[in-house]
Length: 430
Image (spheres, one colour):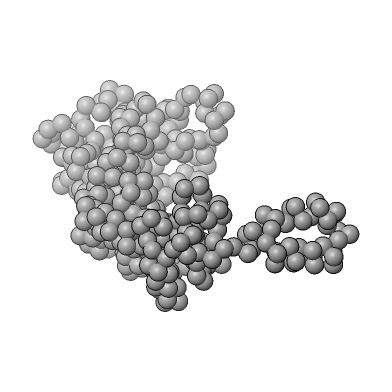
């Protein structure tokens, strides 16, 4: 050790000797410690002959030596965490250039600007120039997500496309993926966060998934749609935004009064709305119904697996009431589709809501009729399992499902006929 190091080591041992062991052992162990503290001054002459370790060049700037490697490293703190920034090799940067760069970074940090080297600036420019726009990348990524998750229902893909196209693309569409920031994501979400929170929350999750692929593809440095530690600092939590609620349901008494709005069912809109009510089905199941799905002899409508929300591998049998059969018999056949609504045209089914609301003068929704049915079933003593199977809901845990193989068709037939009679209580015929 150098003389000054030796002096401080002996002085320290003299004061704390009883706690530090023998003098020989302590002085030997401090050789490494003091070589870290009393480092040689880095100069142009000795820079390539310094021993392994870290050597101070300037405030916050060190030279890290590992064998033949010599790298300038700037140490700084942000958010209470210490970080090291690699400025470059000593073979590429002179000591004065490294000091000047460190000084610029220190000034930038005081302004809240993170340090970035000229090489990183160039790499970012190249990446930005070759980066695809959000519009192109998002559509391609949704297709990839659909393939990876093996979506069997086109509804999922359509819902992703719809929210991204209608809400995100108008704001982000022309931006390069590498240019999108947290503020850009907030510009998408803030206008609807308080008024359409459920939609906004789903959109945020979809953006997070798309950006996760972009990060993996090297197009983005971080994911600007992450919630924790990111957007949660700017947006109130969804659980606190009290606007979600359930879809508006029409009470049975009001439905009985309004049923005349669908009578006589001479056009396709009235026909599909009425059929959906009588079968307590989802619009995505009823609107694309086909004639070959109807078993006239047994009065059964079989919803194929591809339209089942529960993704079961076999058709869901729906017992048809007398009123439902009468409705179907009154429809003129114009092709394979009963209501002439193509399943691939996902947008058409959602247009039923404004038509329904306009016809009835209410805020009722198509899906709300399923809630009306469920309330009626509970009030009239229909067993929960039977009522849930009428709605094509999964009942019981895995063990119960393993043993309960029956779809309770005949029990459901009685329930669906009673439901249709209740709906038409004030109108005995279509």
